[in-house]
Length: 454
Image (cartoon, rainbow, N blue to C red; front, side, top):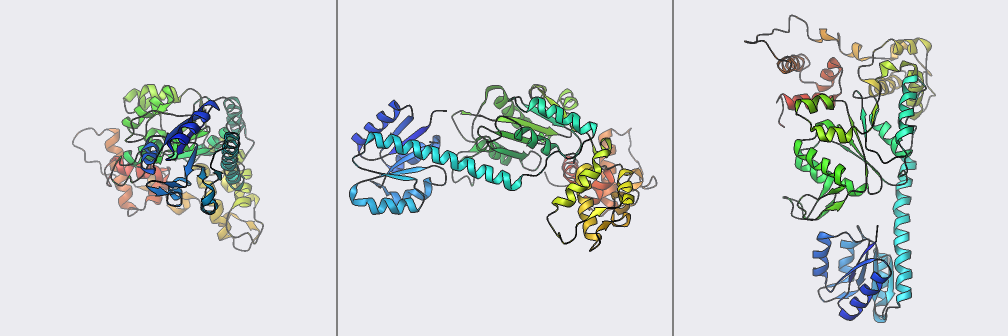
């Protein structure tokens, strides 16, 4: 990508000279002569560096810097008489300063150094964050998990779009992170977005960004997550929840590599790898017309199925040890599970998958107190928290089907959800455990059947 440089200087001759020289150096340079003109330019463009004159007709450099330095590296241009002001500007965020008259060799050196420093700083901050967050992504050695790792190893080095499928709580985002870490873009950003927690306009703004004035409250331009993930990976969790309008725009990104910010008039390049995940049947949804078939086939270029925990129970001991070693509260006692406790875990079907196992381990750590061994009595499973978590969660006597006509599956789903809400006084966690799904999916069902405002 050719670096874009904005020159803000009211000296028309010097401005033209610098812009011409920068273009000859291989940069894409543009010049403006006032802060007002620069603001107009910045509404439509995102330069990689700004050259700023300390004294403009309509503003001083010290007033402008707070608007520029959060987003761009800035090199101050100053005359001898205002060196003190330039040094002060560097203390408030400017990267370098140049003295007039400008030496073109020095200009090239300063620009290259500033761009390199800014790039290294971004990469350092990203890697530092990853080191702080880094934990084992794939825990276990079961044949089912080895198959997942085999698929990850095959697709990770490419830039192919990946669709991760599996039940709620199986660790689909961990698979996405593993794909990123093993990819050729691992040193660049990894950005995740949960597609089922936002309204359409907010989701669109978050994903694509927006221009100033695009909607009420949009008081400044905002970059979207596609831009934040520049050169890296964009993970879209619960992709099956996005609306048809967003589906169409995402399809355009995948087909053309182009997108527009909300309220924008110019196309931008989406230089990202897309990894998506869902616990829904996208093929069935595409056949029903609730999910675009063309988008499904774009996402389905390479699919990884993540098995539920009941299909990889051999991994439960390793997962328990991992959660005990990495829990972020009381570490006063080195804990381990007794053989009887492990047997109890192996006999349980784990409807909530790895997420439920993690919650159980953390609860057991608390209940076991100062004891080193976690015993069966310290383990409280969902079928013990909510009596009869199977279909008996609502008894047959309670299911009084009074439909005038033969009910559809939608009718039965809504009726059963209503009974569960009554039985558990609206407690979403208990309803989720009774249904064997996540609270997020309960929230989706409540909206779907209009038990709450959309």
